[in-house]
Image 1 (tube, rainbow, N blue to C red):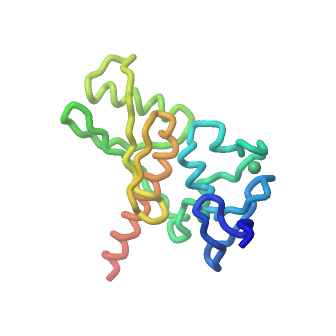
Image 2: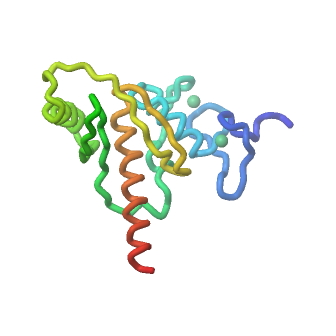
Length: 165
Ligand SMILES: [Zn+2]
Ligand SMILES: [Zn+2]
């Protein structure tokens, strides 16, 4: 056992569905989904898009954290925001200016001053295995939108399947 043919993140070996890849110039292989989850946890920091060791650009993690069957499903992402015992459901997007718009709508709905400071904790479904992940901090907004999109696509697909059967 040399240690070279295991994923440096999960220490698992390659298998047919999960080959080991080199995602940057570093000589250490990784599963695509493991690297993508690592990047997700680094969302909003330079490590999200760039290897901290070799500085190579990393592939967009979203493509590896989107289940094959949901790739072409266009569902509206939503987030439930709970504040002061009140919950509101907002549609969310990752477009330019969407985060500022999101803050603005929260201030309006919850009657907050426009310079209110937020301490977000995004409770998301893991895009691949549906386990729960919590992303703490405003820097995770765009990553949380991606998770919300996948969850919405999954719900839409499941409701269609029920409708057809
Ligand atoms: Zn791995
Ligand atoms: Zn590297």
